[in-house]
Amino acid sequence: MVKKAVLILALLIILKPIFPVIEYVVNYDYISKVLCVNKEKPKLQCNGKCHLMKELAKNSENENPISTNKKIASQETTVVFFQEMNSFTITPLYFQKAKRANSNYSNLYSYKFSDSIFHPPAVIS
Image (tube, rainbow, N blue to C red; front, side, top):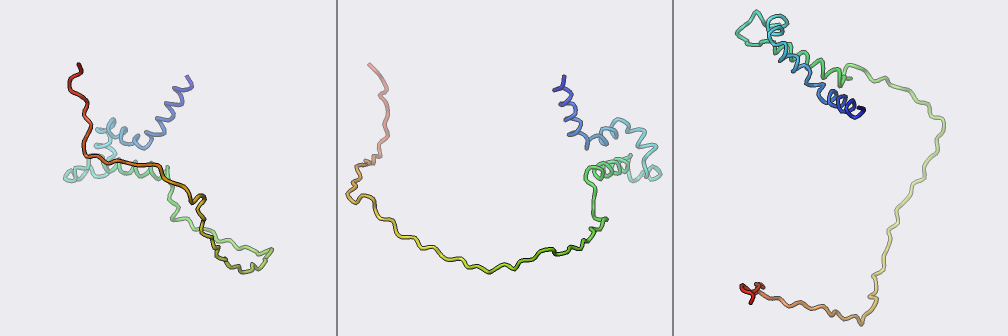
């Protein structure tokens, strides 16, 4: 029961931006004849799309409010404590070359290159 409620809530949150489109499709006749701003201009063939655009804009504005009109308040700060930092230099590190651990090491690995490809026998007797 709880899983179904969480699933329904998640679907509502995901589908929230689509609600104005669903409302437009369901109430197409009412929106195109009553709420349409351009109903006096049939050449535009708006059919309520202007109302749909307004609803989509309102929906997106409610989700992400634009803060361009708000001014950021400047704050004055008072320095309570100040300590001058001493400059520092980075000293380069020198690494010694690594010596070979065992100079008597012999490589016993060998590889024989062959152009022929192994094919299993065609008939087993």
